Image 1 (cartoon, protein in one colour):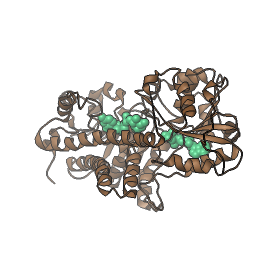
Image 2 (tube, rainbow, N blue to C red):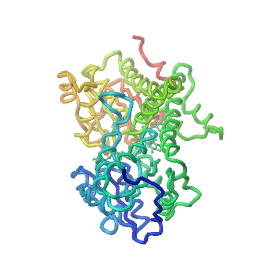
Image 3 (cartoon, helix red, strand yellow):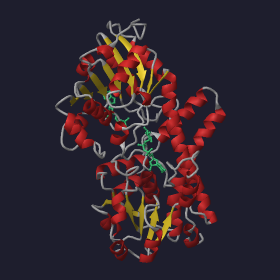
Image 4 (cartoon, rainbow, N blue to C red):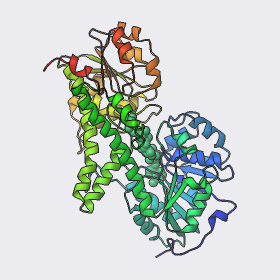
Length: 488
Ligand code: UDX
Ligand code: ADP
């Protein structure tokens, strides 16, 4: 067996010519490495990915992900000390620190399907590192992983007797999409979990170039892995809690935004993450909670598993509730009615659509035979159609002919919000893009059928102003929803 942190002392932080590589050029790996390269001009940072198209985009003027401020950061460092390529083996051989930042989606097959994380890509990375490494390497888990994955990574690394030695660290990323650059520049904290003081100090010395030492927390490996899952579970829980209250507000005449302001003023609760919505999306929240649920079940903690699972159950309810409310309000049928969809990304300022609430709302409306005209400022048509086809496909990979027909024929893509709303019976706001607030709503209203329904899934638009123009507006957690709905 080869060495994995077997008391080898490699004071790498004293190395003059440290080199970094990152396997996985996605939403986490790309921006994080770009920031490290920007802040540490003397450290070569090589980002590698198997996906040639993605790498080509990183090397072009059209980066594969949209993130405010990212273009400038990449432009500053690319060609100086930031490189993107598909040369995974070379990058591993040359680097002192290897970040693993590959995708860890929810398993769709076999044991733990629908809950456990699929660690196939992590394992493949670890094997590739083991095969190519020479000398001593620090391997850093960046991807969110189930607790004790580092154990598996260590075993794989030690299985190839190439003479290399390894330290494994957990350094979860807490950036949120849309604000990634600011989150990387001014993080609340950086978390590094590990066993080797030297390895931890080496990684600390990288972040310490721009982040104060007090903000760099160090823990053992397992605390670090679990802290990431816990942080996402708590954040998602807040969104589900406020969304649960939004349903009660609609029944009682309370206003969810007023309730959020009132409770958020309590310093123990705080004002952030209390925005009622059509449901949370993104690549992390649902995946990490299901992962946590699976972990708890594995350890026989059924009550704990049930507790966290409710956060996802509530989120599914919120999404379903929104599409059902649209159908009920529009006289119990949306068949052959045009509905303009504003926004498809899971939140503003990103082109990411993974687990976006919009996918499921559009799917449900399609199955009610609505004609959807979708506009998102950053999401391309191909991605929208792919997501909808995937959402209509069941766990065994089966897509019905009817669903395929609906996605191909009842979806059109608009260049702007006006086109999406033109001749429509309703508009549904599904992403809170700022530019949606600045539209000419008189013009929008004039182009629509009467009554002109406006379903605001983000409580983005001003209710009084929309009422004055003549829209019949329905927001999340406002009692007007009940008042205007015909009985079914
Ligand atoms: C999240 C975590 O915030 C981040 O720390 C972690 O690294 C990755 O997962 P992200 O998914 O990019 O980040 O975005 P986030 O801002 O957390 O929003 C997640 C979802 O919750 C979005 O769909 C958003 O619209 C929704 N949300 C968020 C609400 O509906 N209401 C809120 O008050 C906050
Ligand atoms: P995240 O949001 O966690 O960054 P993404 O899906 O955006 O996830 O990015 C993960 C990237 O990792 C993808 O571009 C994928 O091609 C890449 N990847 C997965 N496995 C490997 C591997 N073994 N070697 C190199 N890149 C990989």
